[in-house]
Amino acid sequence: MVDDSLTHSGRVVTGASWLWKRRSGRETWLAAGLPPVRRERSEPLGPGVRAGGAGWEMMADMHAQPISPALLVEHIADRITGPVATRAANPADGPSSGWTRVALDGPPSARAPELAERLAAELRLRGRAAVRVSAWDFLRPASLRLELGREDPDLFYTEWLDVRALQREVFGPLEPGGTGRVLPALWDAEADRAKRAEYVDLPPGGVLLLDGALLLGGPLPFDLTVHLWVSAAALARRTPAEEAWTLPAYARYAEQAAPELTADVVVRCDDPKRPALVSLP
Image 1 (cartoon, rainbow, N blue to C red):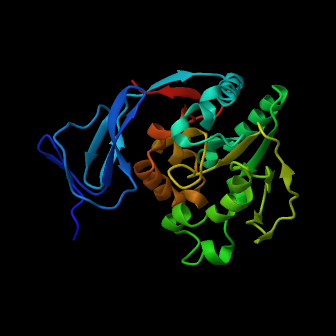
Image 2: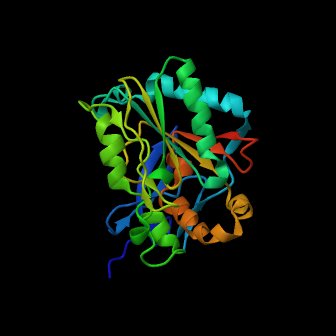
Image 3: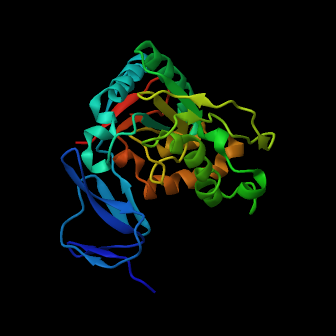
């Protein structure tokens, strides 16, 4: 059996592979999708991270600044239209594709689709073409995503989203030299059949807005990531009883993908009508 533990000031952290990451001047250990390997470290855990047992969790040391929904849209639009949202601003990421690909990530209670619609309208007012794509329109057929049952949280996390279809129909055309011809919807999950959506031509300089849940930490190449963070208590409270079986998937996502730490913009959305911008000390 491979031991993937770490030693920090005499304490052993187990149950995950770890990666040292610096974000906005803050250093911390993050769970990472790396092959299990034993690493001995003497550095202490970064502030705000508690580890033990199967992993770690964020402590309550984040600062949240209330912001109106309208100003939140403007704030995100400023980030999208600014140079930091393009890969050209980060040469290490390679040449710019000419398009900006944005993730609006959050559980259904955070209402990411509504934010995406308002953001698309704001971008168009600023002269930027925008196309909104919902991850819920790129779910795999029921025969695949429900193969082991309708209420399997692990499959919900790893198998429901058709990542290959998104790469083929949405992200591939927006790569350098791509056509910009995007399919905004592929599959009707309720009817369990293909949608008859028309392709949309997104001109260079345009913006892709992909909204959905559990989007970060995977292979989809985003230029800007927005995470709509809902606390565990609020998520449990606002999730309908018939969807409560998904809660373990969101807990796993929080531990493994750490979206509160890795997203470019983090918004607390315990109540979507009263959002707050989150910053780390």
